[in-house]
Image (cartoon, rainbow, N blue to C red; front, side, top):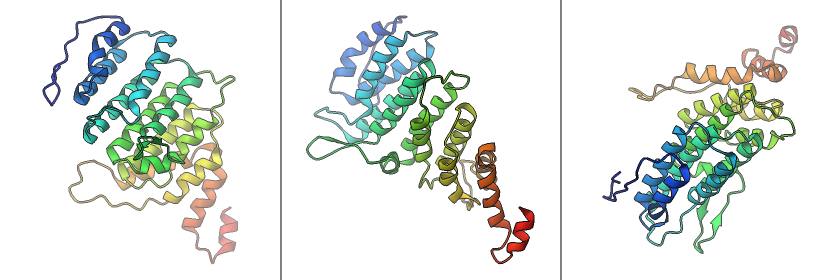
Length: 276
């Protein structure tokens, strides 16, 4: 593998993941950030191609990836490549989510990854965690927010059919709901609405009131795609994604009231009561 800056990585085809990590050690521990990003890409491919990985090995891999999701300590750190390494670590963590069977660990680690990706180094070199994931994510460019949202969605999808006995999923659910607040980019908004719909489907006892409070401000959708839009985001697509969340049986009462407020003028209370 040759990185954009000319660094060359060479590995031999090996089955055990630990051996691959050993081969990539010089690149992962060296000062070259492009080489480190390429090494993380190799690891993601190896994990993706593995049919079965022990939970103990996945736990070690999780700790390893966490060190690369946060701000890097390389003396010659280049801001652009620092961000690229962190992006690659998030993508590798996304693959990790598909492989682990530990429900509690996945739901908690997904939050940790997103929060750490949202950190910035202070002038003293101390990492700063934002008070809420919304505040941290809003500082990231759209493409990097989208990587974090994809990780959460993959985590949710991987929980389909899982046993939630003795697992408190409420913190994870609230976290996924919280990241929607304030999102204005239509591509990310569509991604998040679809994520919440999957959350309602795959995880029991999702906090209904919090979901409604997060999505209600977006109804009705106010969006007109720009001319020659290449992203394919439409008002109808956003509206359908929003209605899919609002039509969940846990939100019937709140959603009906929201719909009535839109179609029935405030000065016709009698008509509104009749409809109700």
